[in-house]
Every structure is written in C-alpha cells, then in structure tokens.
Length: 172
Length: 210
Image 1: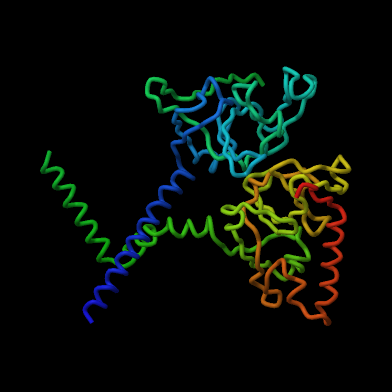
Image 2: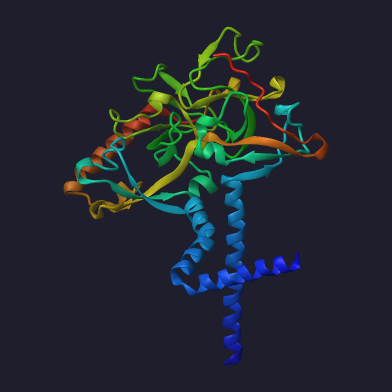
C-alpha cells in the first residue's frame, strides 16, 4: 500500500514539475516573441551596420505588434522572408506606403528607369550591402503583417555596441 | 541595510499569505501563472472562432442573415508543419491591412500557373516560391489574390478544419463529399461544390516539378 502511495505521489510531483518547466519555457518564448528578444543575425546583407556573424542585437517586438504605423524609413526591421516562411531576415526600410521607389538605381536587377509606388500596408526594404542582398528588388514590397520586430541596438561585442539611430532625414 | 531587506521580505511574505487567504486573488494568480501554457496551446494548437463576412459563401456563412459559423482553427499544420495544400481553407493576415484577418481558399501553390480573374491586370501568373494564390468561394464579394496578387505563405496564420456550429453543417471542411448522402436536399449542394472544385482545377496548371 505504502509503495503505491509513494509512487502516485512521485508521479504527481514530477508531472507538476514538468508542467512548470514547460510553462516557464513558454513564458520565455512568448516574451521573446512579443516583447523583446536578443538575436544572432547571420549573413552579409546588412554589412557594414551588422557584421556577417558573431554579433548579438536587441530586437523590439512590441512596437510593430501594437503600432505598425510607427515604423519609419531608415528603421532596421526583422521580418519573415516572403520567399521562405520559415526564415526570418533583417533589412532596412526604404519606402513607406505611397512612396515612389526606383527599383534598382544601379540597373542590375531591374532597369534603372523602373519605378513603383509602394502599395498600402507594404514596406519597401533593402539590405545595406546592396551587392549581396536579396530584398525588395527581388520580391517586391513586403506586407506589414510579416514584420516581426525593429532592431534597437547592437549589444555584443561590447566594444562595437551601439544604438541603431534612424539616420534618415525626410524631405516631403 | 539588512533590516530594510528583512522588512521587504516580511512584506513579501505577508502579501503572499494575503493572496493565499482570499480565493479570488489566489485564482487570478493561478490563472496568470499558467497562462503561458494556455497561450502555447492557442498559438501552436487549436482555437475556436466565429467567421465574419460572406466571401467564403456557400462553404462558410451560407446564409449571412442566420448568423455566423463557429469554426475550428488549426495551427499545427501551418505553424509547426508548414504544409499548405490546394483547396485548404486558411485564415491569413490581409497584406493590405495587418490588423485584418481574411478567410480564403488556397487555389495554387508555388510554381503553379493560374488563370486570373478580371480585376487582376495580367492574364496568367506563375506563383513565385514561398507564395500562394488565395481566393474566396464567392467571387463577387471577395477581396482576394485577384486584387492583391499572390500572397506570401508567412501571412497564413491558421487552417480551418471543422465547422462546429450550426449543428446541421457540423463536420470537416474538406470532407463535404464523404459525409453527405447520395440523394436528398444535400445532393444539389454537393454537386455544386463539385462543380466549383472542377472550375478551380481548370484554372490551375500544377507545378510540373512536383
């Protein structure tokens, strides 16, 4: 009788522990998903702002969930890649809805005379390293609903740590 | 310093006891404490929601004056398995307004060639990788890919699997043919559904590499 009781007690206790662990893990996960997260970007498309690897950045997820209209030209955003829904990519916003954009001034991926108007609810994005970036020149404007967060600061390595200030001055 | 810390600890203990003693507070805290697990179930599992609007008539809300359909939304197949099939009914964020959700049917997958319908400027479209072509079942009241072009799969939020309410249409959304009898009132609806399916299939040339 006693061993059965102890078994039941053990099972109950461990179930509760497992559930609590899962609960804690999901709490962290949803905090990272909705409030803020530290991320490890990789790839050369945002050079020289973000190096190809070995840096950590702080990603503000709250702002674009609550106020997507606060994203401006010059902000660095992370979004789900339109060409591959399982990848998250990081680019800089170039155009807001209603802007007229020259698709590619260098004439490499499109004739340099081609212009488009960014449709409502979309952003025009581009990597800082235009020569090595797949961005709106390839897949066109990106819907706002794909945007996951805005990069706030670079936090690692410490000697390169910096806050990403919006460099754009708008003449409209 | 240590006395101040002690006082804080005392305060914490007292408030804990206070919460433990009052059932409503205790239960609020308990619910808050376990909310991440609930959120996980909602985000990566299943939810039940009402569907608005008439763009999916007659599959959903066939008679909009009689009220809305209660539908089971499945996120396992979209957010974890990432599988999308033709003829799936999905809920997606509108590419034009991120605060709006649309319920549409997937017509074509990446690589397919679609014959578009009037508002779209081009006659035939090849769906780019990672995109789908979505349309409502009701061609006249639906703002779909014929308006805004192919949409990215990342916008698809969940898949609609079962109608739960009203009771007389309870059942899986993709199994309309299987569950209904051969004759009777449902038979004409069934053949209509079949006709619509054929019409959709005629407009799509599947990706040859599949």
